[in-house]
Length: 284
Image (cartoon, rainbow, N blue to C red; front, top):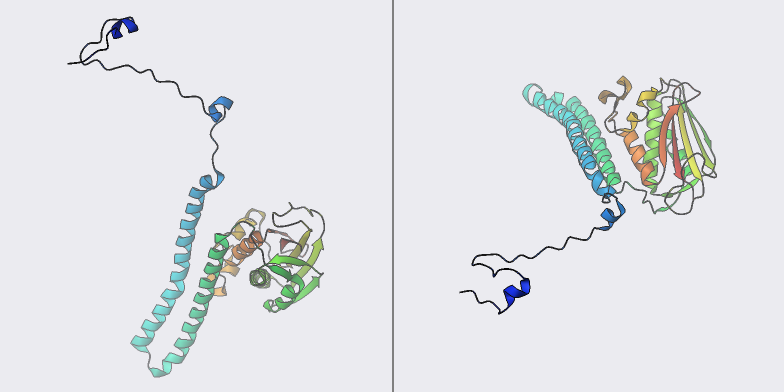
């Protein structure tokens, strides 16, 4: 039995409620949020928006890396199987030499992959190392040019960062130029005050740029490929194939290290007729 307060129906000004009726509670309309009041769409977090693209790049990178690692491993396995099946004791020395070459190549490839993974962990400019004398770095890596005689014009330039990574950046640029040059590799290092055609880096006070250019007189890079050449595992011609020792990671490492230090790298044409790679790093 439902107990009613005397006069409840009269208070409502209507008939008494029947058994089973549900009480009606009008819901207050929700107050419009700040985005509705201003007529704007909700803010989208840029890092969340970038996650699907990063996952796609990571999956592609893992797929490419797996393919590249399988090649020397398959060669080493074939060499071992042939040696066990057909070669006597005298045939093991040349087989061991070839296996050692494959091992060195595999070691270089895994080192490159580890370096790229470390660069990916901190893609934003986060270098907080000690001052690095770029003249000493470049002069110490001139030996990477072995096919032709390099020329170097090095003016004092200092940046802040990880010296080992910057050494690798320079070495990869010089090795790339040496592979493609016909007769000449020209290296120039200078300090550029002001913006110098670039945006001020987000690392510390802006003191200009340390600009490194590496030119060669080889076949050059077509304009349509001058951005793609920095992608991972990209080989534009026969000079970058696996047999010549190129992994397709050298220029990707250059870009990754440059970006990590708040700098940039671009590929253009050079008056020598070949390719020019220009790296800009924040000067210290």
